[in-house]
Structure formats: structure tokens, C-alpha cells
Length: 151
Image 1 (cartoon, one colour):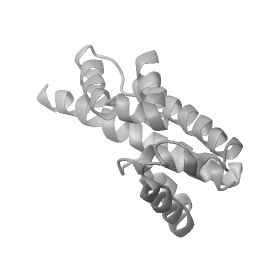
Image 2 (image 1 turned 90 degrees about the vertical axis):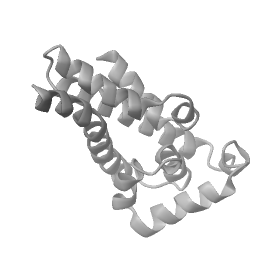
Image 3 (image 1 turned 30 degrees about the horizontal axis):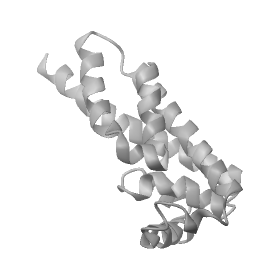
């Protein structure tokens, strides 16, 4: 399921997340997978894996370029996103990372800002992995399940 992997990846990288409507396409992909008799698991795992790779890459970019983040688009044009993302991380930590996959612009910003804040890898990766699994399932399952109910 390379397409599911790429959609998950695109949803987790700041610039790509705004260019590729991954979430909507994943709903359609779930329906397509069910309509051809395919299992739910392959696209779910592929999309979650792609999202996790995107999160880890974004985290690493934030870690490496932490001092340039606030001067870099989109944060230079929308400093409130940087502030909001920092507040989510400080206030909610693990739960904030998990929940962030379901909140628009913050979804792809959390990994970059977490990296820039030098959050520990061992704290970020498990939270990100869980959020990616939940997010991918939440968007693939409706398309898959609607057709399954219609049968």
C-alpha cells in the first residue's frame, strides 16, 4: 500500500499537509479497499507508518533547526501557530501529541515544534506512533465500514 504510506507521510509534513488532502483520500481509499475485498489492516498500517516517518522527520528537522523555526514559513507568517503548539505541548504533553492529529494546522506543526523544544525522543516517538495509528484508523475505517454495512 505505497499510496497509503505516502498519504500518511504527506499529512505529517508541514508544507505537504496543506497541499495534499490526505484525510479525505484515506476515507476513499478505505472504501476502495473494502470494495475489492481487501483487508482493512494493510492500508491502516501503511498510512500510520507513513505518518510516523513524517512525524519523525519533522521532529528531526525541528531538533536540528530549532533556532530558525520562528523565522521560517509558516511560523514566520503565523506566529500564533507556534505559540499554540508550544502551549499544547507544555500543557498536555503525551496526550497533546496524540490529540493533535485531529486539529487542523497543529497536526503537522507539533512534531517540528516538539523537536525544536528538544523534547526527548523516547517521549515523542511513542506518543506519535499512537497518534498515527489512531488517526489512520479514524480516516480509513469510515470508508471501509460504510461499504461493509451496505453489503
